[in-house]
Structures are given as C-alpha cells and as structure tokens.
Length: 353
Ligand SMILES: Cc1cc2nc3c(=O)[nH]c(=O)nc-3n(C[C@H](O)[C@H](O)[C@H](O)COP(=O)(O)OP(=O)(O)OC[C@H]3O[C@@H](n4cnc5c(N)ncnc54)[C@H](O)[C@@H]3O)c2cc1C
Image (cartoon, rainbow, N blue to C red; front, side, top):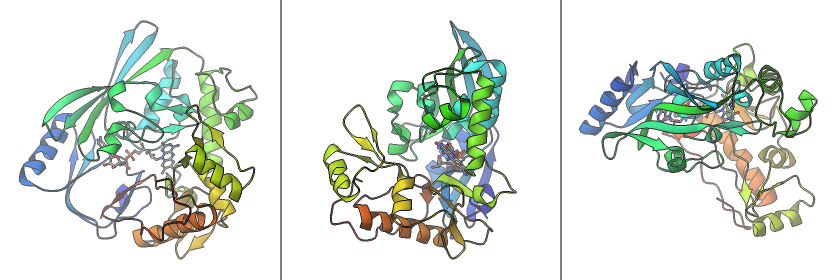
C-alpha cells in the first residue's frame, strides 16, 4: 500500500515499488521502466500527492539518495543537495550554518528533489529565489542535464517541470545562499508582525526560523503525528490569480474583498477567504474527510479512515461552492495520481483556469 508513504495516508498498492539510494539507481530504474513501457511514479516524501484508492499500476520509485556538498562562490555558498535529502533538515542546517535565503521555508515537509517542481514557497520566500541549477534525468532525451534557474521558468507554485509532468526526474538541486547571520528581508506581513519588525527588515536567521515554525504549527502546517490536522497535503488549493477583468467581475460579487495586486496588473485572491465566504468553515467535514480545524486551505484525513474518493468529494464540494458563489474555479495544488477532481458544472461567469 502507498498510504504509509504519503502524509495524507491515502493510496492503494503499487504494482512494483523500489527505493533508489543513489542518483545512478534512480536513473537506471526509471530508464529501464521507460524501455519496457512501464508507467513510473517518482515519489519523494509523499506530502504533495493524492494517490488513488486503486493505487498505481506501474513502478513507484521512492527517492532515497543522500548527500550535500558545499562550495564558496564569492559572498555566497553553493549548496548542492541530492534529491532524497529532507528539505526541513536542509533548512535547519542552513540556519545553523549562517546561510540565508531559505529560513522562511522552515517546516515545509518533503524532499529536496520535489522543491523545484512546484517552486515551493511560504512566508514570502520561494525556492526560485535561491535555486541556481537543477540536475535532472530527461526521460525524453535519456540524458542527465543541468537545468539553469532561468530555464526552470518558475512562477507561483509552478515551473517548467510541473508544466511538463513526468519528463524530468530531479537528481540534485544547487541553491545559492548568502553567507549572513541575518535573514533575507522579511516579505510577509504576518511574519513581520510576529517578529515585531516592519516588512523589509532583516532579523537573525534563527529568529526567522522559530517565528515561521510557530506560525506554521498554529496552522497545523508542521507534520506532527499527534496533530490530526497535519494529516494533509498542505494547502489543497492555490490562490487564484485573476486577470484585471476577472478581478472586476469578482469585485461586483464581493466588494472590498481581500486581494494582492501583482506588478503585471493581475490580482491574486486568498483562496482561504473565498472558501470561508462560500460557507466552508474550518473543521467542516464530509464523511471522514475534513477541512483542517486550524487552516481553511488544508483538507485532511484526520482519523486515517478516509479514502482518496472521500477527500476528493470534499475537495469537489468546496471548489463547486466557491465557483457558484464567486465564479472563480479553485485549482488543486497537490498532484493527483490515478484520480481526478470531478470537473463539476462550469460557472456562468467563466472561470480563470
Ligand atoms: C503539512 C504540510 C505543509 C505544507 N506546506 C507547504 C508550503 O508551505 N509550501 C509549499 O510550497 N508546499 C507545502 N506543502 C506541500 C509539499 O510539502 C511540497 O510541495 C513538497 O515540496 C513536496 O515534496 P515531496 O518530496 O513530499 O513530494 P511528493 O509529494 O512525493 O511529490 C510531489 C510531486 O513531485 C514529483 N516529484 C517528487 N520528487 C521528484 C523528483 N526527485 N523528480 C521529479 N519529480 C519528483 C512527484 O512525482 C509528484 O508529482 C505542504 C505539505 C504538507 C503536508
């Protein structure tokens, strides 16, 4: 069963399951499966997937390669990390060593190899700000390639890797971090408030990390076996980004709604606000699947008794409720493996998908 390999605790059996302890083994397992036409699922920490109850009819390769190497590059260090290393361990080490740039990403679960896939981000930082290069196996050309940051085409919870799913297997990631005891400028208002500083100020790295971990724990966003709200895949929906016209349409339905105006004229809307205003409060449940009692965006399997179908039914209900009320279609953030969200009825207002 794949359920124990995912933070949601969902997912049926794999036809075949191997652990790849090195990058070479990862490449050879995937290449061999490709040669025989066997479907492949590359699995990291399982913290951003919903795996179908029917499981995965193919090879699941669990990434378990380890190793970190560090070199100096002027005022920065280049930290090259194997895909199977824990992200949180890397974030903790960076803070302890005095390397700035990933301190606000403390507490994000999962492995290093997955961080470029959806451009992991939180509290005003994204890995796109520090990734220098991604070493990957290109399943199309069957070569190991070094993908420079600009070729990764990072954007909000997105990258060239995510837009071309399954093509690249990430083997290692190189991050360029500033050698500094101080954090990058604090960009997130709530975090600045917690730290008692103005946005844009810098604070000691350890303070930034502790404040982020505190905030995350209060929202059930740090994996804790004792906290059923953390049996999730993190945020289930991304914050929708609307064009100017779509934002105007929303303004007529919800005057004065919270928004972040982006430099290109588009407008990002907090998905949690839309969900709450559509009538789904924290703790709302549908059968054994539940919205986290601490964070509206996280859908959970609190008692471990839900199926993937239960969770997706809840996700569909929330998405449809928001679409009906606001004409905005929420998009799921976790990768759905062997299952999908029922498309539901399209909204009359047209949806920004
Ligand atoms: C409690 C909680 C809080 C979270 N908070 C955040 C947050 O603040 N910000 C955020 O961005 N995310 C967050 N997440 C989501 C998740 O932790 C990240 O997306 C993380 O990077 C996923 O890593 P993983 O190793 O678990 O990937 P998995 O879930 O194993 O895989 C996710 C996808 O990436 C692919 N993949 C994994 N490894 C590789 C590889 N080496 N090569 C190619 N493809 C690969 C998989 O095939 C799959 O499609 C949270 C999740 C949880 C459970």
